[in-house]
Image (cartoon, rainbow, N blue to C red; front, side):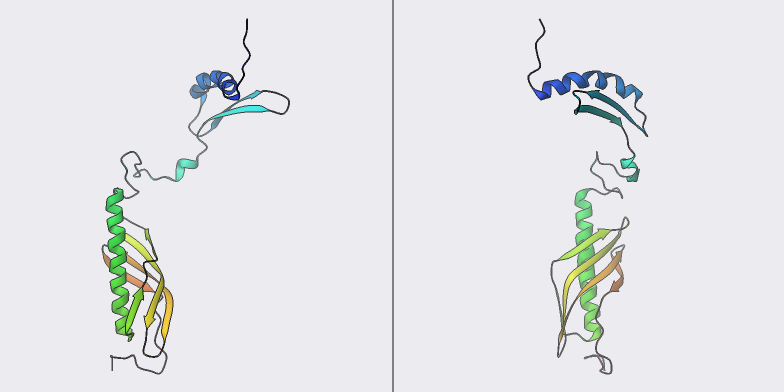
Length: 169
């Protein structure tokens, strides 16, 4: 006597079992092997095994199993480097603003840090307020940090033309 299958999960397992046993041997690393079973006129069960090439963008040095990023750093090391890059950038922005004649700089914690190499980062501060004598300027500032040193700052507002910056003359 044959019993009927009463749940959908049991039906899926029963129909997919032959495919699970035969298709892994036929699967190619660059193609997808498909097994399709018709359940009814409008329903089909499809099982695809193989690689469709979506993982080809990963670098060879990236090791998820050991918890390393693209540059061989652990998450803790990368976080510390991101933090130090943001601090170095904030110090450089404050220094350059003083050199341009601004009285003070207010940098919010709203920043984005992107790692571009083993010791290179691009930091973008979204909300930086430069306090001048007569007016305040609010803008974003981007800087690049290499080997712990700031190599470039972009987005610093320049003082008004015709007036010397305060403190330089």
